Length: 266
Image (cartoon, rainbow, N blue to C red; front, side):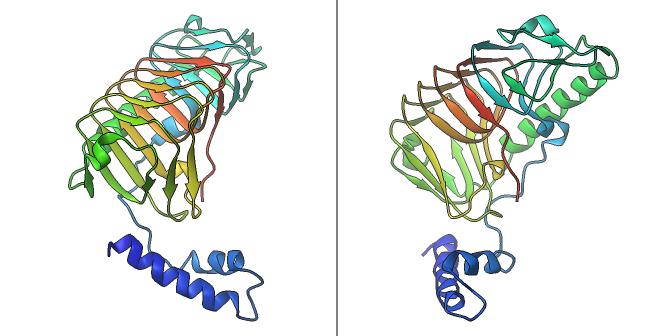
């Protein structure tokens, strides 16, 4: 039995006991009471630095086919504001950022008024450091898990390493507690098929899930994704796709009526 399953069995037994105690009104209440007692599973968290202030961060640009719905800030650097297309930007009077009806947040570019250029250089540098950190983790718990075909699987906390492409042809579940962590090191491309969903279970948080992808990521029409994407190249979101997480890539992000929601933390 794996360490995760051993801990899961213990936690389930403890939840059952606490759920019947006078102070626990439900199994959910009992599980909350246990959260501070269980040991977090998975690799050490990836420090995003100031890159974690952004829902979308890219070096070559961000485009949208309206209307996309973005909750969180959007940034580009070292490219200029002209690389953010489809947003119908409105300049803030001080010139340090712009706004858009598609974004609940602010949009920043390298050519905005100071101190924004320094802010953006730092954020992109932090993104690159985070990528190097996540991609360089050693001693994986899983190597070539299910040959990279993750549709139909349940993914428990740990470090996963793939030298191939990774794809989701059907729905996938990521299961663990709100303190557990996941890192997926992907040497190729990553894709999720049309109308396919990644679902979180057991209290797992998108903010604790990192997909570090050397190739491009493609999100099919109507698909839903969970986690932080640290990409060395591009991320493409087809019509009606969505992500609960962050899109932090070193080239281009393209959106087509896409919903991007910054994740909550524990």
